[in-house]
Amino acid sequence: ERIMKAQALRDTSTMGYMAAKKHLEVNPDHSIIENLRVRAEADKNDKSVKDLVMLLFETSLLSSGFSLEDPQVHAVRIHRMIKLGLGIDEDEAEAEAAADDMDMPPLEGDAEDASRMEEVD
Image (cartoon, rainbow, N blue to C red; front, side):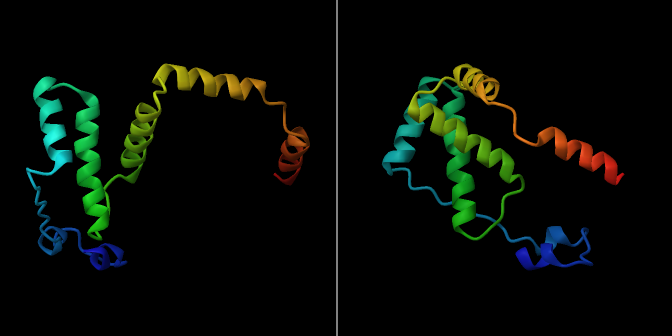
């Protein structure tokens, strides 16, 4: 599948036939799966459970050698789970990031670089 995607002159209409079928086998007795099932039954709209299930699926894809369709979504999910694990509130983290940007002094030579770029044009 990776070789077919890397081909310069690939035909997208045949890509569906060449793509490997993906199977995910889940052990229902595993502690992670049992815990996710209990949490999902407690609250069907829990966003963290949905994120954990998708992380489990995407991680299994990566470890099996497949590529993700949108790696940026995977990265955002991982960051959200890290914040959840560390007890960082989403709004609080955004406010801290904005405050950190305001506390930073301006870069030296930043105005000089901008004027040099204008001279080149």
